[in-house]
Image 1 (tube, one colour):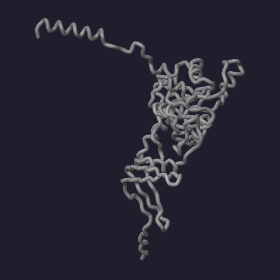
Image 2: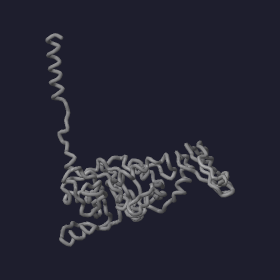
Image 3: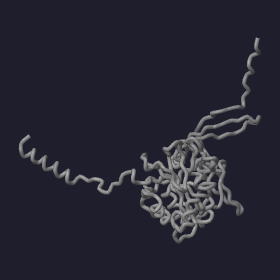
Image 4: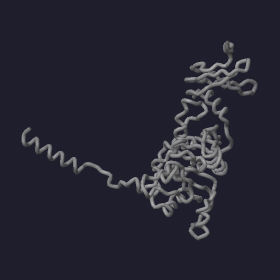
Length: 325
């Protein structure tokens, strides 16, 4: 290698060092409050909020919505504390998550109020799931509830949206040690290949386009009991009002999956004439819907095709055990 080539390489290396980009505005993860779940309920001030209100620590607002943020605390001494208005799900001093809630009438103002309550700012870039209480969706349209959230560029459009039959904060609480409810709920969606009672996920991006279309649609419904959660049925959102108007059962959602040709797995149970159970395991499905009008009456003829296997059959009689000698 001659001298000119070596000089050229040195100059190139020096230029790369100068032009190399870096995270000049980066923040340490220990200095941030990473929000992974958001629950939206009808206004219900926490004891902490009522106490500070009596002390004059409030601002002009109406009580419309209570927002619960689920935070994954950093692994440090600063993160090992429980929020004043929330709950923690873990054993010992190391907590898997923190739930903190505030009440108000403006979503962005509620989030900004956390800045006078927490020493680390809320970061919504890693938000995984938003849970809306059905009672809140009855009173206010989803356009009102999600207006700020859909405008905020920091929140990823892949964030999952579900409806809670009870309070959203219950859906973001768990009695299982080490479990983060926000991660648990997003993980349930991945089980669609195992059950046709789970709806295709509705993300913020899909929610936005559906709200703009003005058509009615479904959101995955979930039920909660003693800190345990389950996807069960679907919430019906009316296209004209964008409000909650009713629910479908698990059985209804299963039937809808067959009608739409969206079955990916699960089990289809039937009963033999003698009353025994026979179960079919589908692997895929397709459907063809043909509308017909006769004498002013409208009917729909649905043709469904599926591939799978007969996985369980209780209709045959087993041989009795031999008599002991």
